[in-house]
Image (cartoon, rainbow, N blue to C red):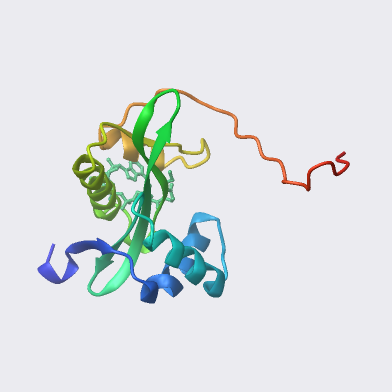
Length: 155
Ligand SMILES: CC(C)(COP(=O)(O)OP(=O)(O)OC[C@H]1O[C@@H](n2cnc3c(N)ncnc32)[C@H](O)[C@@H]1OP(=O)(O)O)[C@@H](O)C(=O)NCCC(=O)NCCS
């Protein structure tokens, strides 16, 4: 691959937000740029979160969000909370570079494990994580409920 096509991984900047928003839409989570500016500004200010982008020839082609979490039952760990690569740039190593960069960040923080939850429907992500050495350990259901004011009647 010519050097100009090499993938560069770096920390995300607020200037990346329009492109992060586009790629978030690709991931299935469309978000308005102004909302994402505020969200990314908060994330960039948090030591426990890392937001990285993959660039090729000066264009952002993917992003990853990793975070340190501390669970009562299992202690500190890193979780990959979001990852997407532009469909036109897949299968050329960008996703792998992003995950390895989060693994390096986790190692530098003294974390011993990286977890990722991947929807069953994201078929391409399963061989991807296995290729990177992740082992599938369980399958879960995800439940959601809107938060209501305390005491409000709920159906
Ligand atoms: C999963 C995703 C991030 C992979 O990004 P990518 O840049 O294409 O990944 P890489 O090029 O680093 O792939 C590394 C290896 O993973 C495996 N892999 C990746 N995509 C694959 C696919 N569609 N089918 C089979 N294996 C795949 C291959 O072994 C690949 O190596 P190879 O291309 O030399 O065969 C990308 O497909 C994507 O954004 N998918 C939609 C969003 C998503 O699923 N995110 C993860 C949610 S947890």
